[in-house]
Amino acid sequence: MANLKNVTKKTKAQAMGMHTEVLTGRTQQKFFNPDEAENFYYFGTYDVDFNKRTDLDVKNMTAADANKKIDNLMSQGYGTIVIKNPQGKHSIGVGILNKLNLIFEGSLGYFGMGSCDGPTVRINGRVGWSCAENLMAGKVVIEKNAGSCFGAAIRGGDLICKGSVGARTGIDMKGGTIIIGGDAGAFTGFMMQRGRIIILGDVGINLGDSMYDGTIFVGGEIGSYGSDAVDSELTKSDQDWLKRKLKVAEIGENFDVSKMKKIVAGKKLWNYDNLEPTEKKGAI
Amino acid sequence: MCGIAGLIHRGKSSKVGHELQGMLQALKHRGEDSTGYALYGDTDGKNFIMRFKVGENVGEGSTSVAEDVSVYDERKKIVDSYLLEMGAKIIKEERILPYSLRYEIEYNKKDLLEFSQKIESIPGVEILSMGKSLEVIKDLGNAKMVCDRYNLDKLVGTHAIGHARMATESGVDIKSAHPFWGYPFSDVSVVHNGQLTNYWNNRRALENKGMRFMSECDSELIAVYIAQKMREGASLEEGMKESLIGLDGVFTYFVATKDSLGMAKDTMAAKPLVLYESDDLVAMGSEEIAIRSILPQEIDTYDPFDGEVKVWQI
Image (cartoon, rainbow over all chains, first blue to last red; front, side, top):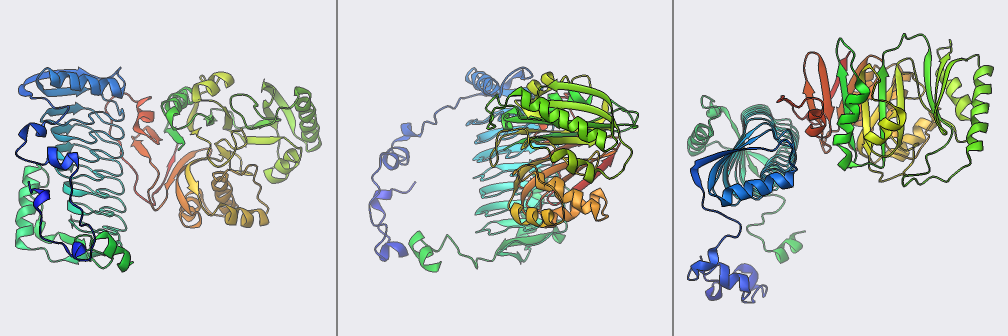
């Protein structure tokens, strides 16, 4: 990690007299200095054994109780947990920050697997709105359909839905990959900033509306393009990556990726990579 | 926020009152200022069932002003005299609560507009529903409270829609509660989750065409809008499709008629809806847990897409 104290190269904004202050905050010094390895301790994580397996029936539990129980099992070293009877409950499986094999035998409601960092999850049912929101790393596989805001604001990891998803899939996403086996609704990739979305089926209106960056691949029909979303050439390396990704995701292995459309940001609105906030104001 | 739920049995009847109570109770975290049921019961189809109120519930956080029960009695007397005057015969009369009544009436004229206008010309009186199958029951409190208060658990029928309300833009009272009757059409009811932004423009235009509004709740507009489209000759489905263009805002709503149930979702898909569909049952709600209350086993559900309109027959 770069030592922020010793950064000497001035950015364009700094040359304009902005942002010249040296970052000296506690967080910068303690958590991002590799010489202080002990400060990398990740609160709320456990070393688990994938071969240590257990079942957890959450039929008569509240979401809070179920999450506490999962946390408790991880603290005992269980690395494979099978959740039975989730029955569409909201907010189950949230905030898991370590490696874990988590299997749901049923469907989840809203905010399932939100704010996770590392687990490998298989949901043998459907998920409601905002599944895996803010995912940092890991893999979440949904066997059936998903609701709206699927993978909202994810930073990393792979999010796979074998069925169809609702509206605003990948809204505000900042990294990672979302793969949809079926169709996707309106405003897919709305304001996405990084990452990739793959949709094997059709997609609704306003695809990639106001996207800053990132890439969307579509196998079927597109309802309409959103503001600043444009077609781009599907390269050989794109096709190779798509094939590999679909194979790893165990979805659409025989899908003809050469006919997919590639959509990127036209960058006519603005490009946050090149403009500092003060410059954005000028652009507006 | 608000939560909506609906179900339709195809080819059979069931205890829809009990089933809808379970679905709405599962959604009570979305709002429990008031809860409403539109139940389509098994009847012989000969007489009308008129559910009406002669006052408001002034308890349970109500924004209504308290009135003496004698005022309710006076209003009821006027309703009875108007019914007699219009040639309607009361077959059965039930006063479920001091302010809430259920009449079974024999009335042979088809046009309910004049009938409704006459009854509702009495200050404080509102027809909640008028139909040969439909009964709208709505009151303050959550689904279980309303169900128990009106003894809806045993009502057998084919389909039903309901609403758990969090009051945001109008008062906590029965007149602003859903479902709304599709006045003046018998057996038409509407529930809505969302917000309509061109309410006043549409309301003024519809009032100029002779349609009536009983509340200032934006959701009432959907019932009136669809009813007006049907008056102009559109089918239920056509009216619903036109509403996607004519109504601005974010919404998911259900409409039910004597033999059908429909859903519509706005073009932004901003409001939630989860749908389960099989050969003999369609169940839908704002959240999957509503459907799970009647189908606890593993089922396949999905979210309808933006701008989608669906109608099912019994």
